[in-house]
View 1 (cartoon, rainbow, N blue to C red):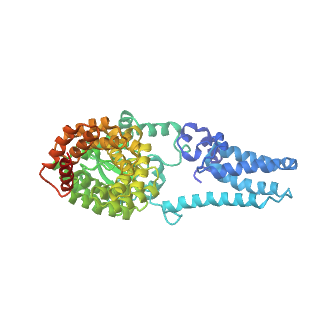
View 2 (cartoon, rainbow, N blue to C red):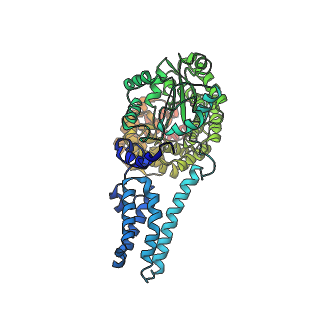
View 3 (cartoon, rainbow, N blue to C red):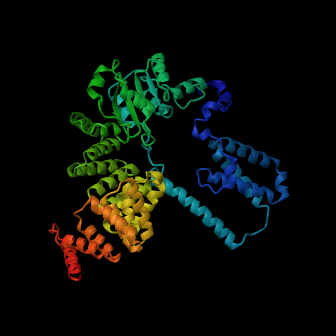
Length: 539
């Protein structure tokens, strides 16, 4: 204990630091209003136990006579509602009190009540256990959510300097790098680091001008921060990527390491990444320069170097796959599949890998494999981007599984809302048309016509209107389709058929003749030509 007797004052100091505690998950208060809601979250066990505890006191008025039980139950309930971290202590203190209260009554609940309670508890327990299994942690070994590769780089190259680090990584960095690299901040907040310092640390990651002042004041020449890529491109990472004074030298699945070039000229020159930006998950910086062959060639070399240096991580291989997707050719897409399989082997619980694998396999027309990959991604992370359901629906459609295609595409449409892509309306309209759900198909084709119409859009709308016996509307659609593609035999034939139904026999005969006189360009067109010739003979 380095604090001596002052350690007894630290809890008071901690509780008073309201500004800091708002930023720490375990110190966040529990909203008492959720007691009346059926919300399944990490506090569900506490809320259930609290309600059961209240009921146990109300069963017999004698229970209120045990003042020590009331004080214990009330104190730890108050602490738990004030801060999440005390929910566990509440359970330990309240369990014997609740059992003692229930033991005061001689009522034996009916079998159905006991069975219902048992099933409810087992269901919630199974849900929590499954959540643990899916994370592949189970308390065995150290969970790989620490900056392993970046810290190893600092240790391997005996780097010494003044670091700026993420709050949550401080303890790990002390364990591995102290005393050569003293941390900027760690979990001893607000005991060692006061509220003003924590405020400065927090603001530096949000405002560039504050960051520049902090670097100057503390002479920072090393930056090792957690990189939550799934959330977005971190501002600090963006500033460092754009700043020529800094160079990225290492990264892993959890963090990035930057060194100041004037402090470490040899290391930044030898190990620095000039083009790769691992904090930009979408690689938009590369997609914007897809026509710059020199840039893409240099980026590929850096990606291959990253895969060689960090072979146990997910993102080097993931970014190599996205690089190949940018080219989009069959050979590059196959390379992307190979890279994604390596990424998944390193992190089999990362949904992002299966998501991109499904997309790539869809592009390669390997629809069955795409479905398998996308369903795996959804099982790992149900709140994937809406496009995951579009890719799944498109794959099902191409496989001929129309019912599943409709289900997936409708889910995509609900999630995407006004951002629904035109291709989804196209697939969904065709799927409904095959199921002869004409009004639903028409709704999809109308939206497609507003967004990005093709001759096929109007041809499909014409077929729907024809099926609904709205012949004038069908004629208008077929005529628009013919004006956009005057050589499409199926559309010409359907337009002739519509004229015939409307009693416009001269027009019908003219278009049947156009079909019959068309030179066959594919085996499928022969049947339409025969049908048109037969129609002409009937006039």
